[in-house]
Length: 99
Image (cartoon, rainbow, N blue to C red):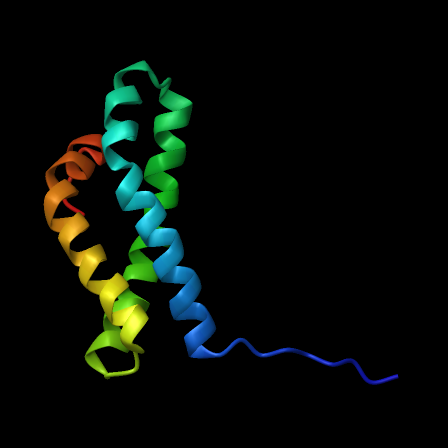
């Protein structure tokens, strides 16, 4: 029997990436407040998982540059850029290096 394989569209990736990125960047102040209490293993998890967010950010930026975002996504992308600018130094402090 043949299997149906669903192929995610770029729009689905962008929507999910924006959702995940906004959740992370909105949460940075709370993460930073708790950061001194985190153990080394928890901090390592964050360092390991951040490249996944960087990849998502790259996909969203490419879609934005290509003009593929709808109005709602463009608004969320602009919000994301503001949050990144606002919290960049904090995330770099937590990750102990440039993002």
